[in-house]
Amino acid sequence: MSKVDPGRYHHVLPEVIPLLASEELLFSARSQATRYAYAEAVIELGERNPRVVVLDADVSKSVGTSKFAERFPERSFNFGVAEQNMMAAAAGMATAGLIPFATTYAVFASMRALDQVRNSIHYPRLNVKIAASHGGLTPGPDGVTHQGQEDLSLLRAIAHSTIVAAADAPTTKLAVWAAAEWEGPVYLSFTRDPVPILFDLSYPFAIGRAVVIREGEDLTIVAIRDMVCQALLAAEMLAGEGIQARVIDCHTLKPLDEALILEAARQTGAIVTAESNIMYGGLGSAVAEVLVENCPIPMKRVAMGNRFAESGPYRALIKKYGMSAEHIAGAAKEVLQRKKR
Amino acid sequence: MWQVPASIEELKRIAVEIRCDIIEMTCEAGAGHPGGSLSAADIVTALYFRIMRIDPQRPDWPDRDRFILSKGHACPVWYAALAERGYFDKSHLRTLRKLDSILQGHPDMRKTPGIDMTAGSLGHGLSVGVGMALAGRLLQKDYHVWVIVGDGEVQEGSIWEAAMAASKWKLDNLTAILDRNHLQNDDCVDTEMPVEPLAGKWRAFGWEVVEIDGHDMEQIVRTLEWAREFRGRPVMIIAHTIKGKGVSFMENQVVWHGKAPCREEAEQAIRELRSCLV
Image (tube, rainbow over all chains, first blue to last red; front, side, top):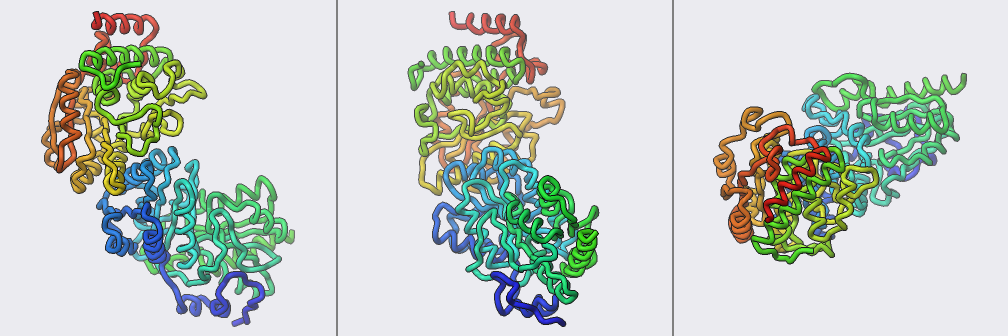
């Protein structure tokens, strides 16, 4: 195990940095599912802002918003297994000045209710926050029907959409609070399974502003949500081979921080993207669009391929389906080869 | 401009004017949905000129009653009512569906003063109304929410999700009006996908249900006034209507669901409509 150089890191907690030498170490330390961080954050919001209401669709116990319902029963509305109705009702509430957080799983928010999400929320630009748990492969054992591997792509295709998927519990809280301040619809994506706590509330979170969390000159890894910790692990694997990767926490998929990505492209000359979303239309596509039009450099997408996964532990799935730190490191070496040619 | 609140006789005259506007604007646009606009014309007239607490000078007034045309394709009737009520100049009606118009092919709340909710994709409006009614209760506002749904529209499953929710929360500040004109885009509703028994379904979902003649202005006004005061559960008014009402060659003809009259047809339609006034 190589020694980690803390001088390269920004915002990563000092006690976490040495753990980046090993996935086992990192995941055995403090972690939390970001869905629970959302639930805590929305209760704090409820205390501060009487216009905040939470809408559920029979997964309030799973996500943790049942605690909001206990604290603020008059501002909590459980619509049962009826996500379409919940989304359109959230739109109606927003027209009257409330700030609804419509809570469900990614697959239901982005597919079952997509018509309502497009036509009744985004088209009229209503101030609805869509809180979607079970992003990517994080609900591993639940299987494919509950794995939200397309939501980032689908929401990105909708005009006026804003999409935020934070890397850990503290930055998820910051994302939820920022979404409440943001005028207009925001899609928030959370993990079902725990992910390591990398940051704290001093993190400089702003919607649309990606953050360099590790310095590097040889290439850049742009990662989102649960892949940020994998990107950091990959960067340390690469460091062991003398390769220094910059790592960007690209928590806002849309609007994409094009300036930061182009700066990284020009300074490091190669980019790898990492997401546990399908490879079409998500972060990899978004970054590729910016690069190909402005700064075409070697690039590779680490993402879910053209297939569905299966039931299994989350971390085993991202290994089997090609999205682990090893895969990111492998992709990095590939783009470095192309960069040298 | 019309006197508001209008008398029954005045409402009838306004409804004729609104029907003429519908014919004119769809003819001018060369497209649109006259049939379902004409069937809802009397109800919309009663709401905008007698029943609803609104102020055309303040379309965003927080305490105003809300109106949602969930069957958004019938927006010519909504636009005509808003123009006649003074929300915007009547000259806009001739711009329906045209480039840069404030009057979109389906209602857009960000473009048209007085449009309380964007609509067009069927099966959304009643859910939106549920949200508005819940918000009104939470914010301690006594506005009433009025939603018109189509009889073809209730084939959408989400309508019944909304029906359950309105009943669960006993939303007596919400009234739905079902425009029972028996025709949808392709065919007769009852042939294409039967929706009866409608009253029984809505009652079973926990709503207070009444059935009216949706072209009897006196009955419409009386029922809407009653619905506003009704307490304990949401009200569904099943309004029996005639698609294309008022224009002989359009009445009960499925082809006029989504087809505009040509100039000659429009002139004949307007002659017929105005002849009721004398």
